[in-house]
Figure 1 (cartoon, rainbow, N blue to C red):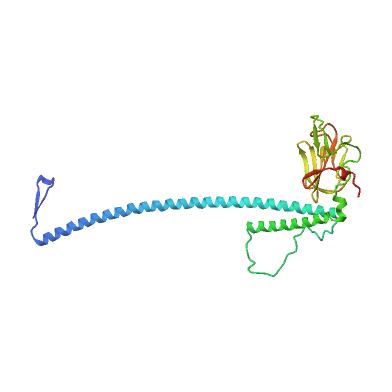
Figure 2 (cartoon, rainbow, N blue to C red; figure 1 turned 90 degrees about the horizontal axis):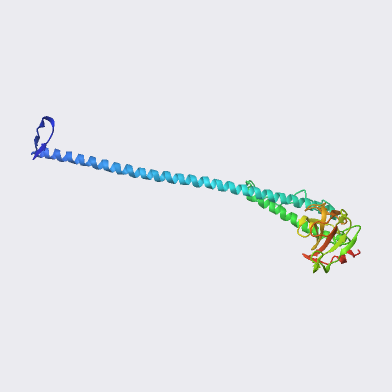
Amino acid sequence: MNIILLSKFRGRPYRIQVGSPLQLTFLAAFAFIVASGVGVMGFWWGQTTQSSDRLAAIQKEVQLQRELISQTKLNAQADLDALAARLGQIQAHATRLNALGQKLIKIAKIDPGEFNFTESPGLGGPEEGDTNVQLDFGSEIDSVITELEDREQQLSVLETILMSSYMKEEVFPEGRPINRGWISSYYGMRTNPFTGKLQFHKGMDFAAKIGSKVLAVAGGVITWSGERYGYGNLVEVNHGNGYVTRYGHNKENLVEVGDTIKKGQEIARMGSTGRSTGPHVHFEVLKDGRQINPERFVQSKH
């Protein structure tokens, strides 16, 4: 076998003659080594390229996980802020209920030790299980809700006591909402002073000079104190047992929502606000949400 090598060196070709078995073996081994080297390089290149692709995919997945964790943290913080705000609202509501309960106790003249709204109710029982438990927002809210339910139950019992026979005179609507003055319009059909047409009047009007005292006809809790369409400045009192009284067209309201008032207490000054032709108080009595004739309460004697 002749192998011819071409080279620019001296411009002449070289001829190598291979004929012996040893030379053939050496040549075959050399060819195998060269081919193996090329194969290994190709395999290494392929593996390197594939590893780079896998590394890029892993890095992308890690970045996605980081973004997911960051978003989860933001959502968790938002949930905690919302829970904290809700807990604050519930605690404020509990404080208002406690204040209302204390005022109702004073009206009912009940021993404060029987309905103590300044202290937690008595609780107890044998120890059960592991007590080393960290409190969270859920348990805090459950605790406040339990307290509210307890306060609601106490207030319900208090209302029952307030409506008992010996308190009936204090909270039952009775008498006139003014000291001096006259009845300028009765409950029932009348001529509307603005339209001249017949219209049903759902209350009684008591007229007097502007600034006269407007009096509560029974004890109760203020559930409205402010402007209302048609009524002008209005005061609404809930007396319990389904009874509510309203006092409209006031020049000035002297009470606020949540106040507890006594029978005969001054709650407003007479005026002519809203749909009114002159100084007077529009007086309504409601039973279970419906206006009824106030005349029998104005004239009743107990």
